[in-house]
Amino acid sequence: MRNPTRWHLPHFGVFNPNKPGKMRLVFEAAAKAHGVSLNDTMFSGPDLLTRLVTVLFKFQQREIGFMGDIKEMFHCVTIRDKDLPARRFLWRDLDTSRETDVYQMEAMTFGSTSSPCSAQYVKNKNASDFSHEFPEAAKAIKERHYVDDYADSCHTENDAMKLIADVIELHGMGGFVIRNSTSNSKTVLKSIPNNLPADQEEDVSLGEDSLKIERVLGLKWNPNKNCFGFALNFHRVPAAVIDGSKIPTKRVLTLVMSLYDPLGFLANFTVTGKIILQDIWRSGIGWDDQLSLATREKWTLWTMKIMILLWTRSIFGRTQRQ
Amino acid sequence: MTLVDSVLADKIGLCGPKDPLSLRWTDASVQNEENSRRVSLTICGENGEKFKIDNARTVNKLNLPLQSVNVKKLQKRWTHLGMAPVSSLIGAQPKILIGQDNCHLIIARDVIEGPPNAPVLSNTKLGWVIHGNVQMYKQMSKDQPTFSTWSNSDERLHEMVKESFKTESFGVNPPKKTLMSVENEKALQILEKTTHRTGNKWETGLLWRTDPSVLPESKTMAIQRLKSVATLTKSQQRK
Image (cartoon, rainbow over all chains, first blue to last red; front, side, top):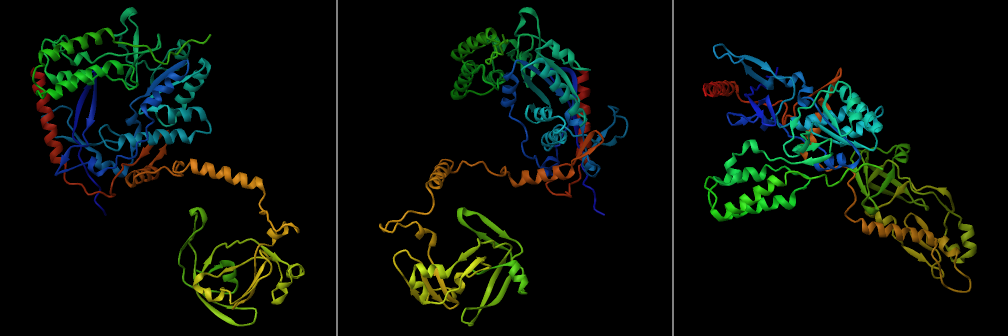
């Protein structure tokens, strides 16, 4: 009898500032004991993802755009019994007075080096299994999905409704549930059965008529106007940094880097921020030091511009057909 | 190396140890003969003399084109071909290719030549052989000693076009198989092996680098971490 490989994973909770009130439990597979971590013993596997930019482009290609995501994708896939002893964790329900219980995590977890590849593989395999029955949906799931996010577009509302229904059904056959569906077409949106509502955010950047905005692959998308918007992570940045009165240089780094723009809508603008950052770095001052007066002026000018220029239209201009 | 068709080898009862063989032909095409055997045989020439061939290799399908040679007809055209005994062949398929390791059997000991580009006779230890391109000679004009090649111009054009594409696509052919690191290949193999449908859910295995892995004791570390998280939570609550 071989001893089964046994491992205890430490865990902790993290909060996403974009999803307030929701704690995500992380099992830290990178934690080391005697110089070895569970991740050290695993392959990360090949990158099976479709490129993010590809998915975003395809989302913009046709008139009717729609998106959704798989509910707790990693938890949809179970790990085979043989491997479970390596996924133990201790739990005492926040009761420090008692002994800990030992559990085994049966689902895939965040933070495990092999989880992303395995999840993609299973998602694609499930789609391939039904590619005869649902050729279009299987192709969509394999090619227009980024991790758990599905974003796609069709020429007509009818096409979109059919595709969405098929994608939902196909995913369902693998235990994956699509939620947070949204679309720039109200007809399409209404056709989606049991649509679990998306966590909508107040629109900070497109404020004029207080529209709701959605997140598409990390970008902010206004389905009503069908344009992308940008918002800086202001909740992480103290006001003094923005107005320039008190600016440690590492805060500048945080702010410049927090502009997430994979399609480069704002490239002509963000480059100025990066140049400022480069100047700071060249000057050799420490990350905790305050900005020099000259740099502070440049910085304030840039943050002022950013406030004005917080959103931009889709460069693809998904125009209405005549 | 001498090659023998495996069907012929079986027929005449050639035995020998298995020794896989990889043959490289034109355009770097490689033919793998997993079941090739190393055999010895005796070959007999036209005049009844016997020779031993060692280290011949069997190949699964030699599959060389059928050949027909009407010696009588050729002799009418070229009288020099009547100077030595050569047999006619009808739809004969070569089953043995004698290699350079037995070149003493195939090199020419005597040569009988006719007019330019006419077939040539050569004498080997195994008998007389006709060489040359009979087809080519057919198209030769009687008055002018010029020749045209047998292949027609369309074919040449086709080849030229093919060649030009070949040059253009040099080095940029899509690989037949996606190239992947050994690690990634192993990971995919594990995924292929361990991923199963259980009802309408999926089950998969962890991507162990070595299976089974031997891991050090880790419970102490996990308990330590649990304690520190508890302490942290408490101190945050006090705030």
